[in-house]
Image (cartoon, rainbow, N blue to C red; front, side, top):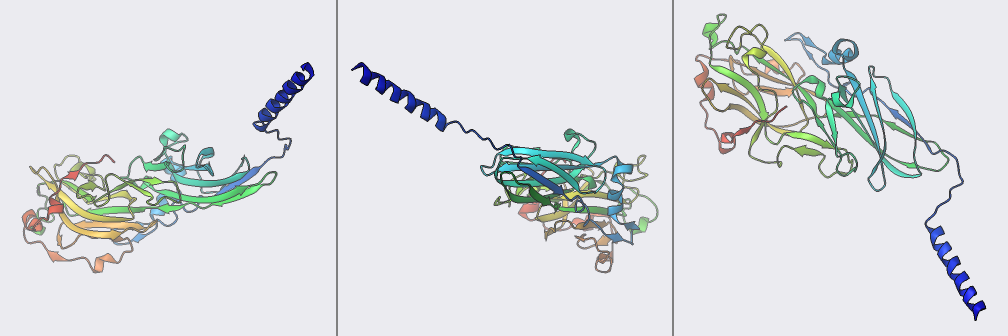
Length: 364
């Protein structure tokens, strides 16, 4: 009887030991699963190029090419690795003062991964100084990036993603070539210091206190998941009837040589970034004593990634203000009808219900 009892106990001990061993993996393979990562920086700003000979503006790229010496900027490079469950398992973060290709190596466990790489400008070698914030990064399904300030030319961003399979004991290579997402726009506002052509070249207060370009459903975030149904995050639901500022609101003091004046004394060039794939865009003014903006020239546009657009509004010219790709061709098509009166005749239009909607102020 005792012998049978000892045999039973021995069997239970062996059974218990076997269950524990099922939960323990002993890997005697000491080989390294190396991943060689190559990230090209060439396309961060390569396509943002134009020549505006009318205004003697040439090659925005020249501003970008000298970013490391004149502007004190860096290219912020972030490469993130998500496993097959969509969890962030590793990342590479670096800063560069040139557009030379970044080459790094890391070690990953065998398996499938989604690799995401993002380029943007930073004001220094610190993630807090980046022009774009990375949010909810732990899961690929929730990770997104958003701009710190859309109102300047340093707000551009490029993106790329790849899927790789890491095999045990082998070196896996992955090459990423982030390309621009969104467009750059420069706004040129001309002759706003005059009430009408009769006052040229004298200066008169035309009662304008702010100028802006605004839009419907402004995008302010971009999902990193390459399989996301909609890659864009909007301030509100797409199709919402409200309007949001796309550019900074420009005031007289923003114009050169106007510090001592209460009106727009000289012409102004400003920049802003457009993340939206499409945009209902409107020019507008706020006049002295008004509580809101008067809209002018609403149109729907399909925004092409990596292109540079011109938003041009000449106070002396009546018709649709020009918005389009900056290719120096618009001067032949923009209306040249003279203004015979002051501000009033420009806004003698029937505002539809959408344009009557309140313009929502969004911090840039």
